Length: 341
Image (cartoon, rainbow, N blue to C red; front, side):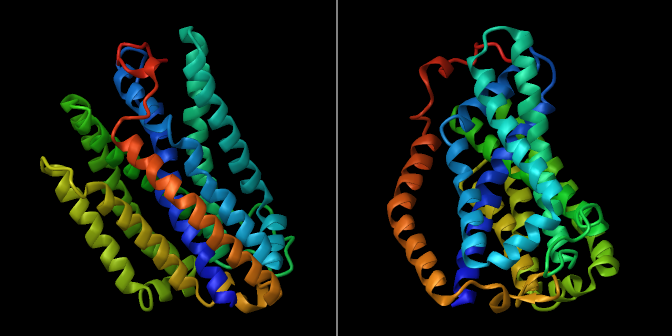
């Protein structure tokens, strides 16, 4: 039963990486779009693409937290009493990011839009970096079973830095791919090329950092490196093939299947990390059954997840389908002539 709950938990992690990750990545491209005039059209596309779905994407974070503290309370305690600094920074980033995104859309004056836009964009870098560093700290065994580990070295270490940088790059890649497809569907060839070039750049950088990360993990997280190069190797190779296929598709003119290919590459990398971690929940010293709640709690948790899935997943699917077809764009965003920050 504990393994089943862990599977449910990891489904949420993958969903948040693919959906929330693209959400964060859009903030990265907002930050690098340039001045008010040069960045007007890219920022408009980001606004109209994120507006209908950005809150829904982060329901997966709530899902993951609920499953972690309900299904594995000892692990939740260990993580929160050790990695409270990056967790607090990530929470702050999410709050500032949401506030900046909402207030920027409601602001009429350019100086105010710039302030709120900066809060949105910078927080979009802070949150994924912190989540990546948390994953690195857990995977490298720096979270003690009893909690209260080192509040600094637990997330400021080579594996955590690698995880944070990769998280930012992966989010940027996903967002650029999604925005490239969105621009094509809105018959904006100039914007489609703009985000295609950025997707290619982000993909190349992600590949380069991933290769460099092999040497980092070999020295700083030997068990994780061993499992990634053995048990999880098929997933890593398929993820690499999806990444290459996505880059090839970006060079072409058709976008059919491009978003799914990019999402599959990211999902397989996250899944590979989970397979490499198994059977441990915390690094190399706490196995999944050891951290699990009583069976009665686990059964209730799974039951609630199934019921919630039956009720909520159809709504999310409908939301994304309508948003993808442009049917949820507010009237005040119907024209790209609206000035950006």
